Length: 140
Image (cartoon, rainbow, N blue to C red; front, side, top):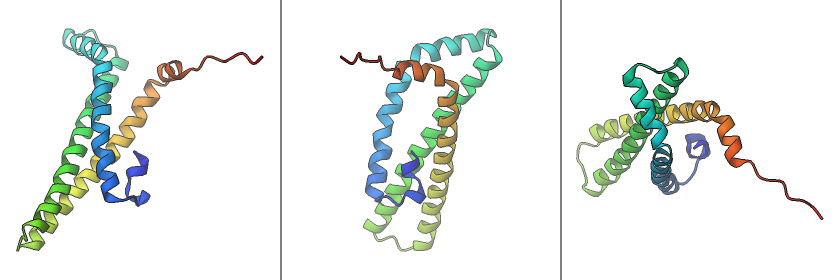
């Protein structure tokens, strides 16, 4: 995600491609952790949720919202820019302002995604390390 920021200066087509490629990764992550999320939601409504679990739930919902806004605003700003050029929109100033607003929303939500993803990974770091732990091979 850091490579996709404005400082990275990557090709806009690559940026769009990577943005679209992250969608199935997010969906797969949610599906793999759906059981946990479902039990968390049940506990939330039963009132039996610890403060840490409440924080985890808020963080997960924040990530879902931030990623949704980033994806939708990214697609919308990309489409508006190309469609206005393709259709020869006369009121260029109005189009420029709306595209700029979409770009700002995209940048802010992408930054929120980055920060929330860091917090999410930090919260689950022990599990991540266990999943990635490689068994040492014996050298003969």
